[in-house]
Amino acid sequence: MDNIVHPIWDREAVKMSGYNLFVKYNLPAFDKNGDIPDHSKLSFSVGDLILPENIEVQDDPGVEGGIAISWNDNSGTGNALATDRLRVLAMCEGEVSVLEGLEVTRDTGAANILLPFGAGVEAQVYVFFESEDVSEFSEDVHTTIAVS
Figure 1 (cartoon, rainbow, N blue to C red):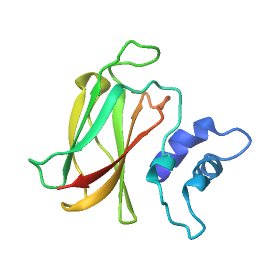
Figure 2 (figure 1 turned 60 degrees about the vertical axis):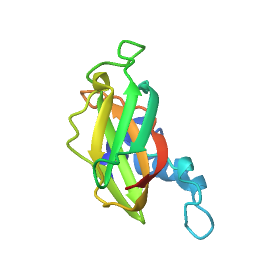
Figure 3 (figure 1 turned 135 degrees about the vertical axis):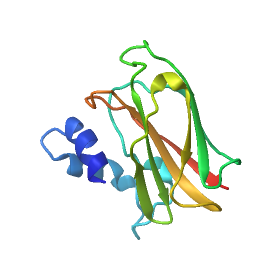
């Protein structure tokens, strides 16, 4: 999680650490038992980078454990650039996986991703974008998906 919290949340934190801001922002997502009843209230990325439009995350039935992500390329709108990179974080049964090494940029408009959890699971998927120089991040979009 350090590869998410520090680069993203440290940039947004004022008079506190990025970790403390992350906890403060996400505390309402947890119930009194420490469970997360609504994963859409959890956020892993914040920032001013514009998200692509119409982000969709779907099961990829042709690939066991795979998902398909698509979006409309909006490069040139505000600070959105064609070279902005896709980032994906996924959760399943308490396991958190930050998918590294994705070489997918905003201008491609789609990506097929293999999740590390296997097939037949329900996963929480968080999609966001970062600038090529890793100086800007977008907010994330959450989807709950049944992975076949």
